[in-house]
Amino acid sequence: MSAPATPDAGAPHGAEAVANAAERRWAVIVVLIMASLLAMMVFTGVHWAAMPPSRVETVDVNTLHIKGEFVENNLGTALGKDGRIVVRLVAQQYSFTPQCLVVPAGIPVTFRATSSDAIHGFVIGRTNANTMLVPGFVSTFTTTFPTQGKQLMPCHEYCGIGHEAMWARVQVISQEAFFARASASGRLSCVAR
Ligand code: CUA
Image (cartoon, rainbow, N blue to C red):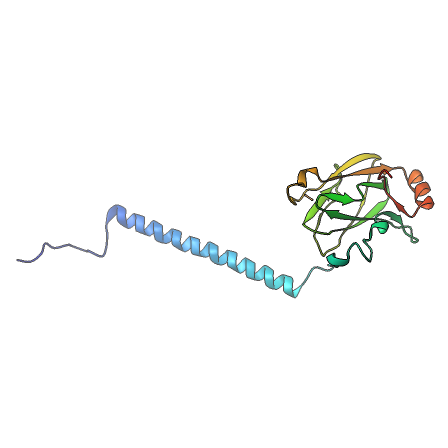
C-alpha cells in the first residue's frame, strides 16, 4: 500500500500562492529601494570628492583664541578700509562672543564666524541671517538688515545641556549712528563694559 498522494506538493494553491507572490514582490521592491539608496550614497560621495564645494575655509580650533582672525580683541563689528562691514564672532558652549552685536541697517554686512567646541548655529530674529557654526570651519554670509531695532540671536543647533540658554543680542542701528561709532573705535559691540 502506497502513501496517500500529495498532489503538487511543491506548488501551493489558493491563498498561499497569493501570499508567496506578494512576499516575493515586496522582497524585490525592498531590494530595489536599498540598492537605490546605496547608489545615491555612492554617487554623492564620489560627486563631493570629485567636485568639492567652491569655497571651504578652515581654521585651527586649537589656536583660535591665541592668534589669527578670531582672537578676542578682533571680534565684533569692523569697518574695513575698503568700506566693507565685517562681523566676527565665536560660539562656544554656551555663549557667543561678543554677546551683543551692533550692525547698521540698509547696507550689506558680512558675517565671519566659527565655533571653538561643538556644532552651534544662529539665526537673527526674523531675518535671513542664519548659519551653522562648525569647529574648524569659518562660516560666512552677507546680508542686509532692512529695519532698525533689537533682535535676538539664539543658537539653533542642539549643542548640549546649556543649548536653550545660548543667546546673543543684535542691535541694528542707523547708518549715521553706526559710522559715527565705527570711526571712533576699532571693533564695535554692544556688550556692557
Ligand atoms: Cu550652541 Cu545650541
